Image 1 (spheres, helix red, strand yellow):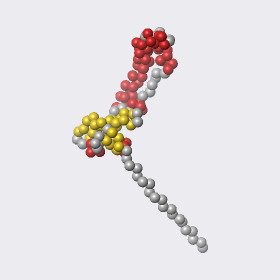
Image 2 (cartoon, rainbow, N blue to C red; image 1 turned 90 degrees about the horizontal axis):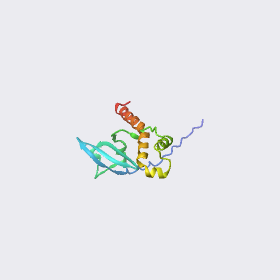
Image 3 (cartoon, one colour; image 1 turned 90 degrees about the vertical axis):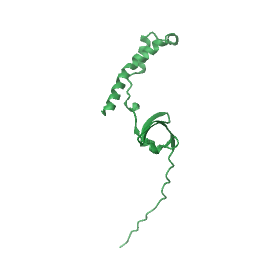
Image 4 (spheres, rainbow, N blue to C red; image 1 turned 60 degrees about the horizontal axis):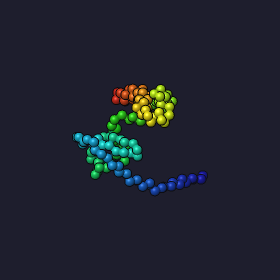
Length: 135
């Protein structure tokens, strides 16, 4: 009878990374909880954290990851109905066909954009209401 030996290899534990500190702006603070605002790359964020996690206007990125979110996550609820075609038709409907038209009628261009995005505003309001209700 032959016995087989199992070889177990141990590896060195990976060193823990040092948490990155992110600058935050304290919007409000009450009862040990702070509403903070920060910029993550190009995204502006807000969230609630225990105020004892704030050190000299900074918080670790690990703590920001667990911050209770504040506000509507617009990037998750926005659905745009405006398309380049709809905007182009609205511009043409306002007599804007050329650079000269655009230069002499900027209000017409703004009106075309507002008319095109009006539907999106209604959808945005509904999405925000649904988010607030937990739908």
